[in-house]
Image (cartoon, rainbow, N blue to C red; front, top):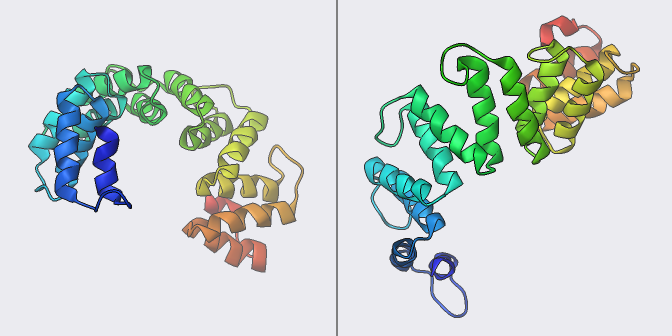
Length: 240
């Protein structure tokens, strides 16, 4: 039933595109306990998709149903909702942490990443910041391929925040994130090569990575290219 819903969404030789049918089949699938269909209904109501009116209260209701049926994406959305005060729910950091943790324990790498940032700022239970535990969750997320946590690990090892400072590990994590297209990681990696910080100074490699970041419209990278790498006039301390 769930797959049929998205056949109507895309349309093909067998069925014509029909947004009404999308909702109809999502509802049938949800009634049969499909947590992904419940989640998709939440998204539909949250953003007014497939011909339904935007209704944040209904969105939260569907997210909750999905989460109660083991839907990790819905758990993550509920965490965001409570963290930011969205989808008709009041801001509640404790509930946000609870839902982030549940989604993370179900293996949602983005939830792990956001939970790590939450813990670094608020602590596990909102009592005090905990950079060490934040690093532990970033490691779990990075091991699952989350490039955002790879970048944050680069920062952690670069600055000794929650772990002992280790320039080699910082460069390793920056490199992994950069290879996956993370613009800030590309810039930081280029800056390390430009300075010779933990690696042999290499202006051409620095130019390569900073250019990659600039190509993604990272403003600090574009300025660095225009001033330091192309004109030799900037102070790298300005580009932290």
